[in-house]
Length: 95
Image (tube, rainbow, N blue to C red; front, side, top):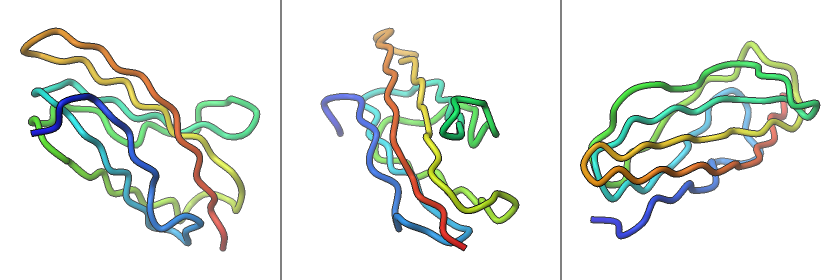
């Protein structure tokens, strides 16, 4: 099991339509991932729900978005030991 919360780099990056966001969760957690444009405007909620401890991967289809740079922000709250984690990653969509 992972020792710490961690947000991995999405892959592939740059991507065309589909990408995967890897996570590391040391405990069962409530997870929320939001997508923002370069101006900081919330574009979409990629994922919201509970994930078990381990290395989950969140798949995202961005086919309705324009090419450009986007930021994804994860908020994870541990349900067993109460940890809280927030991190941001950058992705490039090329069509």
